[in-house]
Amino acid sequence: MKRAIIAGICILLMSCCLLLTACSSKAPELCDVKDRFIYLIEQSGELNVLFFGKGLPTYKRENALALRRGIYYVDTLKTYDNVRENSKYGSVADIKEAAQKIYSSKYLEQIYESAIDGVVTGEGSAYLRFYENEDWLYQSVNATDFGLSQRIYDYSSMQIMDISDEHNVTVTIDSYTLSDPRVREVKLSFVYENGNWYLDSPTY
Image (cartoon, rainbow, N blue to C red; front, top):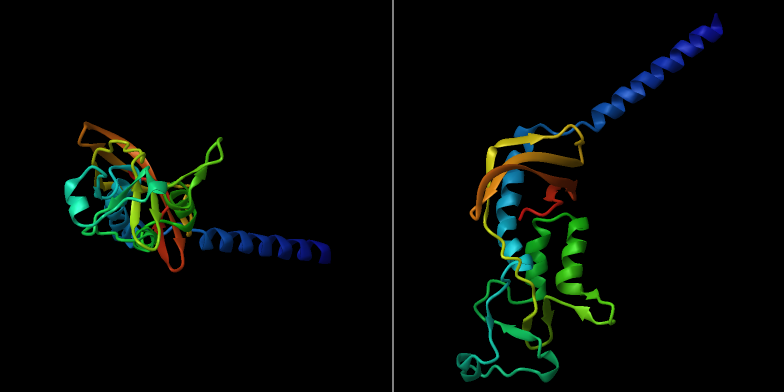
């Protein structure tokens, strides 16, 4: 009898633990996070252009205006153009500050590797989309422009998927691009860290 009671108590405790775990990992309600998610998606559009599109406005090497403004090119930076002085981002720190407001730490690692920190190629060289020295911010002339078309999201269709939990949320949302008006359902991921939600996937 005593063994049966002890076994019953153990089962009850295990059930309570499982219930608490399930409750603690429950995904947030859409109404509580939707505004934040929309903000992140909208703000990421500018960063898509920065990292995967045309990038920043630059002075081309053959540009006479650039020469008149006293902009002289360093021979060791032949594959880079000077970022214009009126650019919204005037330094690598500016670029990182903007990205850190939108992206998760994990996704930032990918962004920084391809755009700022560099990727070592088979020949041992490193590709940087942006380079900065004590004089100027530069952008690679070989930076790939993926020709991104503006993506439009139907936020009224946003739904949280069942795989989500309290720190990781994946949503489905109907979307199309200006170059392709066909509506498709896409998935976007968000991560809760440092007291807020951040985008954990591309939106282009």
